[in-house]
Structure formats: structure tokens, C-alpha cells
Length: 393
Image 1 (cartoon, rainbow, N blue to C red):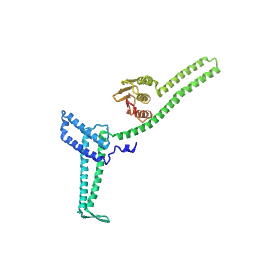
Image 2: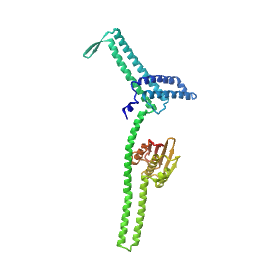
Image 3: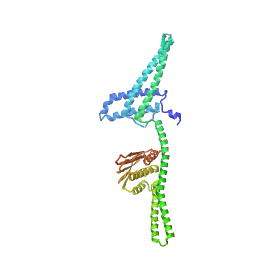
Image 4: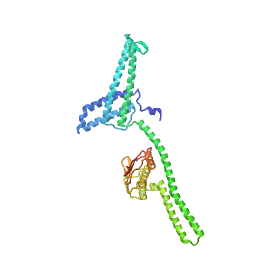
């Protein structure tokens, strides 16, 4: 971000006086509206008209903030914003006007004395120093000091104006951009960490599951070969070992399918989110009910995130919470799509744990939010809400 972009939203001394002056006018108008028109807010029939007046005044305030302070916010504002702005505008305008009046008075008085020669000597005594100056020079000096104070008060009033706007209307465009850059930087780091965590999980699955099955199968086949070599007549024992080897090979294939499914379910691409969640429910080992309330398929990134949130929540409920019943609900509105997973387990899920924190990073990378409510003793509810359109999509 360039220096110009960083400072574009800050009020400058060249623009702040106009903004403060207009803010004083709108502040006085706001005070008049509140002091004289407050009975209208108590009468139901007059309330809509009063609301329109407030909305119009708030719109003028937003236009003034955008034009003279560069504060472009997404909020609409309301009676609270108008009231706060009225108080700030009136007080700031009063302070700046008095300081400016004093500065002009001192400057003109000092110039008048100097030009007409009516200045009188004025002794100024300081610790260890005694200076004799003229009343005109002293007036000019005090006037310049008052003018400097006026400039500082103007900038302070503009800053207070922006603070009130940020409080009631939300951050401006520059602040939103800064926050977005910070979020993207954190998300990028989180995604890298999530990928590394997923690789570690796959390695554990292969080492603890598939590899052990493969070792057991190799040992059984070695025993079959040894049995045949040592006793050709022990057909019953050989048949038993072959049956065990066959059973172990089936388990190995099941482990491989499970690992492949956990890495990425092909049904998600081929058949969609509903079929993938049905598959996860079948593999859960406990009753899982899926309520699918989406009118169409989400975009690929969002669909994948929804699936992994639901699958991880189901796995945690079964493995760690001893849940006996799990409910998965998918819903949507105009802008977002959500998945909520509830279970009757013992609760105590840690949002900072490896699985849930990885899901949170995945969801935040898509501008979504993940919430975990899991008090000790249960029940647990995990909700992920994502925008229908992915960022930069």
C-alpha cells in the first residue's frame, strides 16, 4: 500500500475546516431536530415521518464525511448517530469559532497598533530575563498562538468526527482494506499450517492403519509358505491361514478406501454435497440425520469446506464425545450458506484443538465464520457460515 493510499482517508488541514464548518451546521440542525421534534418519535402516526427526517440528516452527514474527510462507510446510521453527531458538531464548532475569533481579534489589534503607531511598551519579566516589547508585537504573537490553537482544535474536531462515524457507521474503506489485508495474511499462514496438519494426519493414518494391516498380511502369507514347505499334508492349517490372509486383505482394502475418503471423497465432485454427507453418515457408526436445505450446489470451494466441517464434527462426536445421535442441518439465505452439527455427546470440544482450529482456518480463508458451543456435559453445536461467492471469486 502506498503512502498516498495510507493517508487518503485522514483529514488534512486544508479540508478539515470546511468539514468542521459544515459539521457545525448539521450538528445544530440535529440538535434542533432532537430538541424540538422529539415528541414526534413518541407518536406512532408521526414516527415514520420523523424517521425519514433522521435518515435524510444521516445521509447528509455521510456525504459530508466522505467528501471532506474521506470516510466512506457502509453503515446507514440512525437516531443515535444523529444525536452523537449533533452534540459533537455543536461543541466542536463552538470551540473552533471562539478560538478563531480570539485569534482574529488579537491579530487585527496587533496590526492596528503597529500600523498606526499606537503601540505601548509592555515589560515582560521571565525568570532571569526582562524583555520590553510593544503591545502590537505581543498582540501578533498571541494571535499567532491562538491561530495555531484553532488549527489544532480543527484537526481534533475532525478526528473526533471520524471516531464518531467509525463507532456508529463502521470503519471506512481504508480501514476495511487494512483489516482485509491483515486477515488475508493470517489466512495464508493458516492455510499452510492446515495443509501441513492434514499431511501429518494422512501419515498417521497410513502408519497406524494401512501399514499395520500390510505387515499382518505379509506375516500370514509367510506362515502359509512356511507351512507348505514344512508339511505338505497340513492342508487344513494352510486353508485356515489363507482365510485369515484373505480377511486381512479385505481389511487392508477397507483401510485404504477409508484413508482415500478422508483425503478427499470422490462422491463430492461426482454426486455433490448431499451424497458425500450421506456417505459420511453411513461410515459414522452412530445414527446421523442429515437435513439438506440447499436449493442448489454451492461453488466448489464452499462445498468442500462445508463437507469437511460436517465430517470433522461427526468424527469428533463419535471418537471423543461418545455421541449416540448426530444431526447435520444445511441452510442458506440470500448471501450465505451454513452447516450446523449437533450431537448429544459429553461436550467439552476445544476450539483450539488441531481438528477444529484447522477447520476454522479453512472457513476464515473463505471469509466465513466457525462457532463452537460445547459446554462440559454437552450438547455440542458446531456452526459454519460461508458466503455463497468465495472471496476474489
